Image 1 (cartoon, helix red, strand yellow):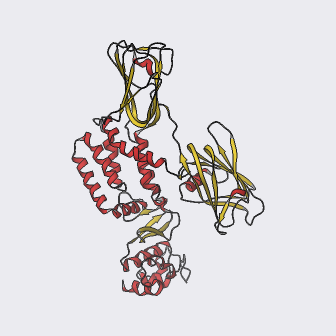
Image 2 (image 1 turned 180 degrees about the vertical axis):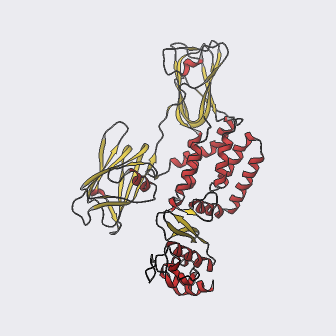
Image 3 (image 1 turned 180 degrees about the horizontal axis):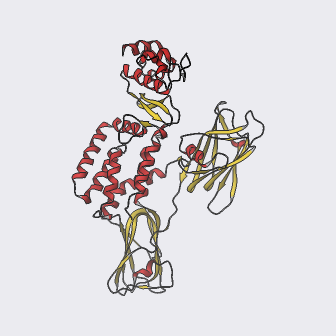
Length: 502
């Protein structure tokens, strides 16, 4: 320890945020020692003990450098450990409240730890660190996880879902949640009740301007789809060499309003001329911006900003053309599209199960999607109830009455799971009842007076399945921390493998 400390003072002073970077000045990288002996042989260190001083005086390769760097940190009380990468040894050390890779060769995605948390991959050290930043929440979530294992099987999901709210970085809770939702005795109404607050929070967030290109699907023959994926999750840059012109495209997934586009070029590697094309729902690509519209910040790694446009957009295409310039390649390190994605309501009731008042005709005709069949209530007070099977944000419910066969009054009630009912009264002629995008999993229609007869009914809204809601909850906690991207991929896989069906 004293040997370490003396040399750290020389190279880093007493600054703990520099200690992990000092070793590169203290050990020479040598495959062969000064006498030409290869490091794989015992003679490399002349048969003396392989210790700190030997590394410093004789040299070493990646294992020596990384182990010595971790030791440097330990001498001053800074957490650190060597880690493995393909054909390489790196190390991780703690600085400014987070874990950082040193002597890195291939990034977090390929790094295996020697000291592990939930799994052997080194990036799980970082998610444990995030969990313990809120130590009270982490401890509570662990207590809830233990309680969940002791609770009735049908109650575990609710307990564990609450635990993910207390500490979304407790990876073990998410794994237990997979088993809880697969429990045969778990009621679907319980799942819907539990996830409603999460969905409402997500809906509110989706109305806010954010980077809507993040984690979307990008395609480019020149960049390659894998590199485009890393660009859009903030984990890498893209480069296209020796081409005078090329395109790349981003699929936004939903109709979107674009507020701003930002492109960060690497050095001088930028297209001097370019066009940005937008694809609408019912149109071909339209040129919406060019390089003439850009605002530039900086000269090295310049950040380009372009204003958005009015056209509702589902895909964006960038067409780059080299016109002179100081490099023979295009290279981009960041692409951001600020905007808002929109969910457009559709028919969420078609083909869903329907219950009806006794004595009425076959209720399947109500939601079969055609007006060629007729449902008769056969009562002055008739009703039917549609099980939407998923949580739906309901825009309206539309009625297609048989001529002269509409009732005197219509009442629509809806609820999520076994929760509180909401109610809307229809207004004559009862063609459409607005529901204000309120959420429901069942819709009940009661008709009073007359003998109601319908050709069909259509509940319009946006449907959310349980796995989508859970993955969105994970995304909310993890997406802004790009260093946790790989952990999130594990969680998405766990959710996709749930056997639960809406």
